[in-house]
Image 1: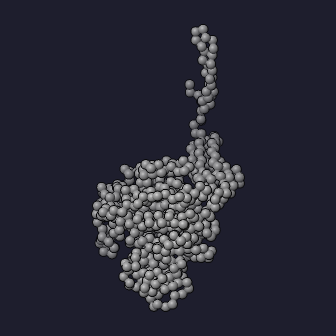
Image 2: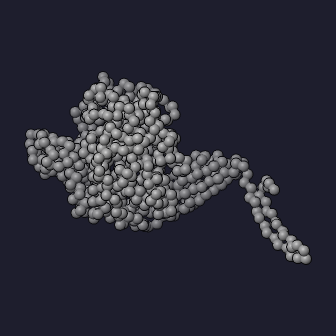
Image 3: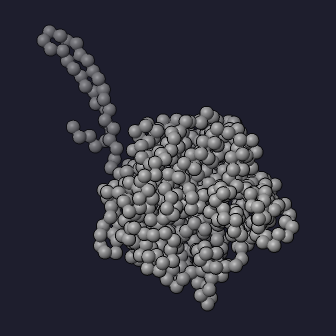
Length: 640
């Protein structure tokens, strides 16, 4: 039988021989017409407190129209024909209905309920936000192999019973490669060394990494330039003699290497226990200083794509509003903690005593507002405002003035943890050149992991644990391979369909202001223009000339969100960049409209990372001791 419509069949069984009894059963065969739409919808999280948001994810097939409605406010949210995601902010428990319409006006519906309760204190339970950025690592080179590790431990399953998978490279190892300039093809490979030669993700090179041969057009997004860029960077440095350090890898092969839990055992454990994002990007398609400035300013460098000091040689600070200024205006406490000084000193006995050796190493110094809290004072004049002579932070030469209530060495952070005197917002600068994990500086990545283990373990054991959140990330990708294009409209080109619907980064890739990258008149960099003639954006019609800084973000970054309120084993696919943390600070301590720029305003609120009701990590976990062996620090022997 081949029914063409839904049919109920009656089956009758008659007795045999002298038996006269009969028995009957019915069965209904449901026939779904070809082309009938299907739709599913889920809410994440399903339970929130007032003021939080939830993300609705809809997957539809055979549909020509998909829309979400609710039963409270009669809101309507149209989606693409295959579904998509929608962030909602209900103030009371709400039932959302996704309706998919197909051919002949056939429809299918699915419901999801977002429960709004009084809960605990919600986001107000967090009284301290800590943000630390290490240096120059892409998501794939560090966390691309998280999935096998998480699955082996059963840490891919959240408390809600859902499977949280990472958009990594574990299932792509045999399909990904890059070619060098000589035609040699380099696939992904596992590093056996914790030290590698330097790479770069500067403005020109970042666009070239995404599309090696023609980064100014709308060709398919290939992610094929990483080896080419690393090779060219090494050869250029050797030829010019202007780059620090030596190079043992002139092929660029190092761009395709990755790590796993063998070296990064502490990071893998912490990222798997707590929460992370596989869509955390740096805000600018360029190097460290640009991205650190953009972090402090809510996403803008006001047109600059290079280091205003070392590259552009500007002899002035940038007068751009910062999160610190916003917090001061709202009378909210903050502090920048520096790990090393400009003399690369971790300890007093490492400093030479030369002028400026003790000056704090922080990108905050690039911004005009920093002068209220730190400035050089070679003449020994009386310090102004709330600043004090720098002997207060160990500089016996008193070569600068500093306000230790707003700028202080890392030891003060550890002290503030133990005494419960953390500010509302704490930004920790990396240990530049010492334990920041930057390639090419002669340091093992294990030094950075050990440093962060000390900081995070101290945090988890401190009185501040109960009401704080620690955001850990890296300032920019640095040049290693990553498979997710940081290009609006293409960010999901290489992602697995099994991960479900992932929002495109177009929703966060917005210009922070009216400043686009530009060529300076006369060729000398100004405070708003520093492009070279060959740079993306220098020619009319370039993507960066037409779309500005929204044309391409920086690459994905390793990260984790550590807090007693963090959801266990959670992975977010919602796009964000560093300014999402700034928005989180603004929303928590100032107000929902206190954004610095349209870029931080466009970021997600990050509340999906937390469960303020259950407080999953009220008792923090006991992480393993980080791997400490440095015998593998051999850049000449990268791996098989």
